[in-house]
Length: 302
Image (tube, rainbow, N blue to C red; front, side, top):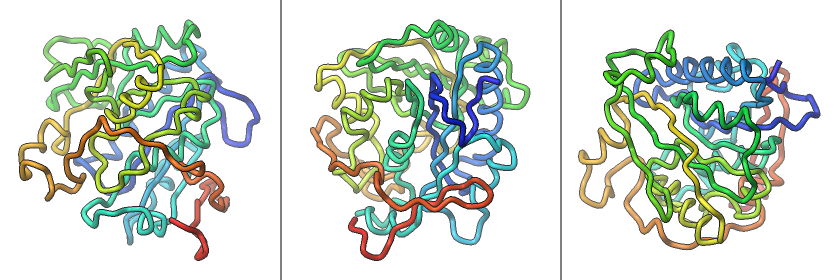
């Protein structure tokens, strides 16, 4: 099959990096993730696109089963990493920020094996156009591929999703357009580059640690400012939920100082990560169930 299983020494064409934890973010987080993953995996396989999924669970919720365990029961061929909560405690500079999304994505990028790496979110469905572009295998290196994110109405549900439902005009709630020069709008849902370019630019910003918002826009600015070209590949679909940015941004103070995702900041700020970004070199402990724990030893530095 087109999916590359853990332990198989084969370079897939595509690594799909997802992050999360078992916190029911947005309501039924796990259900949305499973539905989107099954749809995307099935369509990637149908087009013979060799791919792997890399899940990174950051700051697991105490007293609840690991998301990585639940995923392993459904998708045992996914590569799954669980980051020791001690890393979150050492790295976060904002007590409101329980989930450092782009630190987690960096962990996945550093460990991805694909020729191309896609960092995306768990409730994103690929369009026919994006799948066709991947199937042609003509993606270029040193190009940041972006997508227009089309938000879907909740009323349509996400079970038994089909292209006909995704593409129906009555399914659409809004479209988040992307424009030059940085193509940064709703960027966190689709950022695709060749692996070597991801490594060369140094991943997402790990210098600024007070917030997770705008890290995706900051990455687009970072990549384009470094001389890489940005290009729109097509559309992806995102299932609207109660915690979507469009639904919550106005519920906090003007600068979002009281928000759980952290305050506003200047996303055009340059950055340069240290060489071990993405917890490169951190000790990894494999478990019998296939999960790899990334532990923080007492002598490790944050």
